[in-house]
Image 1 (spheres, helix red, strand yellow):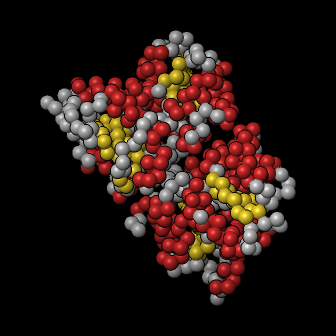
Image 2 (cartoon, rainbow over the protein chains, first blue to last red):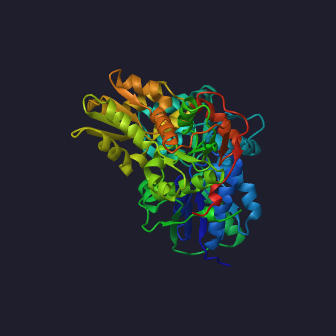
Image 3 (cartoon, one colour):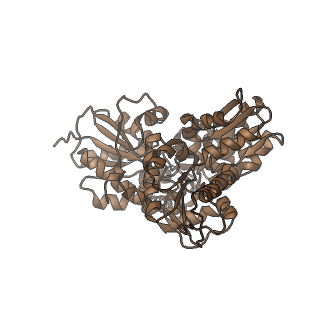
Amino acid sequence: MADNRPIGVFDSGIGGLTVLREIWDLLPGEGTVYFGDNGRAPYGTKSKSTVIKYSLQNMRFLEEQDVKMIVIACNTASAHAYRTLAEASKVPVIEVVTPGAKAAAGATKNGRIGIIATKGSVNSGVYKDAVERFAAPGTEIYQQACPLFVSLAEEGWWDNDITAAVCKEYLTPLKEAGIDTLVLGCTHYPLLSSAIGKFMGPEVTLINAGKAVAEVVRDTLAEQGISGENSLRAFYTSDEPELFEDVASPFLGRGLPAGTKHFDTDRYSV
Amino acid sequence: MADNRPIGVFDSGIGGLTVLREIWDLLPGEGTVYFGDNGRAPYGTKSKSTVIKYSLQNMRFLEEQDVKMIVIACNTASAHAYRTLAEASKVPVIEVVTPGAKAAAGATKNGRIGIIATKGSVNSGVYKDAVERFAAPGTEIYQQACPLFVSLAEEGWWDNDITAAVCKEYLTPLKEAGIDTLVLGCTHYPLLSSAIGKFMGPEVTLINAGKAVAEVVRDTLAEQGISGENSLRAFYTSDEPELFEDVASPFLGRGLPAGTKHFDTDRYSV
């Protein structure tokens, strides 16, 4: 019952590489095809209808690569587009909000959970709903949009004075609320873990959903009997491959294999 | 010889509104159609080929609105796509790099000019070339990409401690080089004028090209005999109109007329 087709993974750009690395680490024998929509990134500041349209186009591309599963490795796309994609897809669709929410609900001891994410994710309310679904009754949830964090991560300012000041600006309300668990609800944020952790203090657990997502991928492959072996590790981007390769490595946590290709998913009408 | 058709103006999103306001102020009788490509913004981090494609699509849309002139109210699009658009267009195309470069060349007294812009604009070298074309021989030109400035402008952090720290990080090399003139080479940057001016000091002249661009528009209309009268002030965006209207006013410097419409220029194959 093996299925040796690759797993499809997409993100607005490079943030999803922080999820891909966890999939590689947990499932080194599986093949992957990654699509980064860098030509239209970021998604976090864009509207629900736009993010749904782009996500459908990206999924369409991955389907044409004959993947056995779609991983939405982007919190904003997961928040806005998961239901639409799951209904439209013939293969299982994995999103990143639920695993992070579940992990946070399991980690809190004092029943106060913080969520930091893009404006789009926060306004959708999807993260808050997901945490409420798994958390004990009476759990208090605090959300904060952190739009500057994406730019800081991409600029490489992961832990300097400016990042510390931005952390203070965004995170003070969460700290004052006394949370003991903080969901990093955007795939860019793990790069800022050190700065975020310093500001929040060691008593606050940071939840990076990447690992939990990889576990869901593993469990779903097993349940559906579609685990397999494939050495493919392909990369596509809707902007120029050189730009993608220039910024990808810190997110992937290692060197990127050569040979990223260009593809415009906007050619699909959805 | 009047031509009452409107002037078409496009930008990657809202930054071009800092140019539109100057056109309105200088030419209050002319009609305008503005297109903001918010669904694919920003352009400053994207590659030349991608920016050319998007700019051609945006121009195509404006042509279908029967405009008499195209204003590229975006420095990155001007740097990458002006030549392509000027060749493809049946009506005059105005860009924003040359007017700013000319103004800077005229303003410097010590022959040391700084240019701050997006990564795309800086890497294109187009701004530097333009300043060199107008400046006295021996003029020294210093460029600096300031990617965080766009996020700061959109977040509304125009003049706080974080913006001051980011200014220090980016602008210290220009200050140490002893420039007396600084081109704000991205349509978002005028919102940060106060913070930039405070860091650089009163002896440094900041060049906001918006006014100079409006003068080029006026002169071109006059030279070509296509001035006219039209009360149209239409707005289109490739994301949701509500999102556009939420963030537009500070850039436009006044309330936005109601009725922004949605349009996807990605439907054009170019």
